[in-house]
Image 1 (cartoon, rainbow, N blue to C red):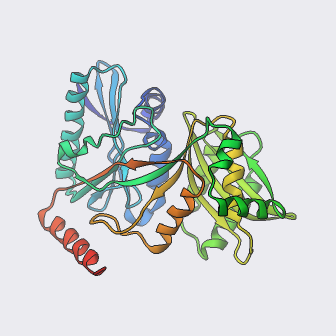
Image 2: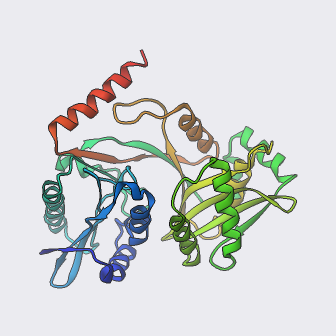
Length: 344
């Protein structure tokens, strides 16, 4: 077995591996890698991604981005490695060991202080097992909410919280929805989304080329956009990622000063659309309060509550972080302990 650095000429093989591997999802693809390489240019991100190859056959892939003294994705968690389906349990352990040993070697070479990873909940082999702790990672898991769209629309609507249900009815009287996917998305429509995103945020939150990538994802069948119109004016948008028959909620934006439950309406219209082809919809993270590795704001806690209102079930979102610098570890955890203590 040998370690092979990911270069652009290997992108096609890498992405085919992602399609074939049960442990891979969208976050393992080069599309997500490139998006995060462009997301925060001020961090001078550099890909350190690699493959484990044996006789020309890819056995595993690992997406890594160096941002300063950390391996992270946009200052957050990168995806866990993905493995070849055909490996026996013994072979997979051997390959896994080589993957994490190489991560450690790269960390030493690049003066890395910490690496962070999270598991893709929507991968086919997601099995409630945070194996990162076997390799010296601290568990920093939270939870996420998913909806089983194999249920009928009637069952899905019945599972929605009563208040949400009423809000959807209220919004439906004044709004109409448009779905934009690979068959009808245009640059002009996507510009409407981009402009409303900037307006709702009050600033430009990320480089223009990241929006170009999101547009290309839709054109390539890996995303869709839901727009809500009041009359002829777009007042809300939400972006969704599609991969291997599952969907993840990305982001949304609403026009300020519109006194309607826009987000409720857009989510339900998205569920109606994705019900045609989607198995599982990950609507998003659930943060209930402070832990020693996660300090959600009241807004983030309320967003989680909003998402739970659409029904479904909660799963652990396994994550982990590994420190390579003792002083940095002590500094981070001292800050976390002090922040946690402030609650008392």
